[in-house]
Image (cartoon, rainbow, N blue to C red; front, side):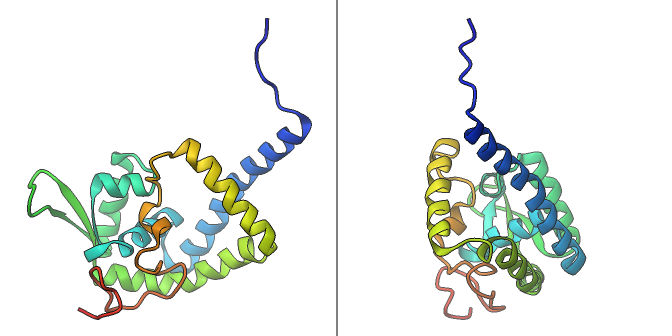
Length: 186
C-alpha cells in the first residue's frame, strides 16, 4: 500500500513556484553582484555576516553556520576573500585551535560599495513585487518554515537579530564601524 501523502494541485503549484524562485533569484542576485562588485551573492552574504558581529570577527564554524555552508566551502570562500584583502583568517587569542575570520577595512569598504546595487535589486525583485500585507504574510511563512528547517536559528543569526542595525541591508555601512557600539567610531 502506498502511504505517500501526494500534493494537491494547489500544493504542487506553491511548491514548484517556491522551487523556481530558489533557482532564479540567486542567479539574478549573483549576476548583479558579479557584474558590479566582482562578488558572488554568497561572498556578499559572508561579508555582511561579518559586518553584523562585534569586532567584525567570527569563528569559522559559526560563520559557516550563519551562511549555511559546510566548513570546506566557507574555508574556500574565506581563502578567496582573504586573497582579495577583504577578510583575514586569524587564530583565536583564547583558543589557538580555533580559526576566526575577520572583516578587514577593505572588506568593509567592498561591502559598502557593493550594497547599493544589491539593495536596488532586492527592492526590484522582492520589496516592489509584494504588498505590505504579502510581506507580512511572507515573513510569517518564512518564520514557520525556518522553525522546522533551522529550529536553532543558526542561519543568518546575526543579521536576523539585527543587533548592529543590519549594515548593507537596512542602512549603508559606515567605514569607521567596529565593535559592539557601532554608533561610536573606534
